[in-house]
Image (cartoon, rainbow over all chains, first blue to last red):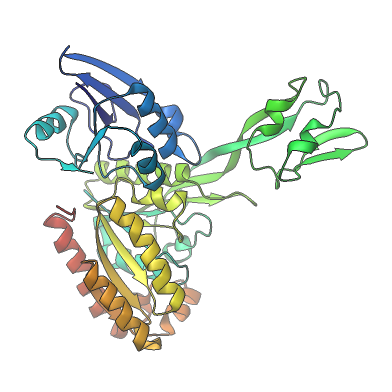
Length: 112
Length: 297
């Protein structure tokens, strides 16, 4: 299964980015292959407007099964993501990626 | 550190005056972020020193290279904003009209039109007259606020709050429900809605609260000028109950708001008698709620 995180850095210990559209990085963890990949989202986060839908489109391409983020995508981004089967979990704002993953495994994150 | 955002939906409800009053009461506890950048006015009350200034680039603007342009006129045909000018056969761009969509650049057969990053203004890191830190911005003529600028101001405010070990970032958000407002809400911990008992006050409160709900952020509300229309005030109170929004306080209409503004003071400084107690109580209440977990479970 592929899990996407909105993050401020590119490692397992990086802080989560509470923002969806203007997140600095998207980190993808494949728990079956135990493999990490990183997408640098700073170009999208630099858009004057509509960063949310752009990041949502990127996520469509990355195609994770689960997204873990801070307080969730805004209206337009949520509409885009609603078209996919991706499950979205929020409430991981103040954690690092590792802690967010553990919280998700324990079922401590709220489904969006 | 907790990020608290003040928004109103409708403009003119007293949001910035109340943000200034809270920052007066909070003193060194906070870093202030003025994200109402279209019509920034918090600096009038806080008198920041504009200590560090940085250029801000947001969006794009078309530029015609006259050496390559073959004057075919396709750009004039496709521009929906009438931004392409033709003077003595020379093609150019009217900056105030260009929306930066890039259509002209895309269809130009000789690639004579470049989309350039637009310098829309400056943002600042300041010390206020109260000794607190403040991040704010000033836009050039015809430039507008954007989610990007709000994100930048908030990010800087958070960084400073982290460095100086401040407990709160207080964000003065912009009116409406557009991109800048979404950006002020994104990543924040608590929302204070400032409203007034008018038809548009309640209507816009409901609209902006829809967005707050989408972000699952806990919210509280201040009804300003509540005695101007008791019927709508009671409708607002019903709405707050129904949506489980914390009702902080009702403030009576008071021309001290305007008089304080003219004197460049916060309402608490201008009329201690009328505002010191109720706004201190509200601020303490906000502090208490956010300490015990502002986020909605």
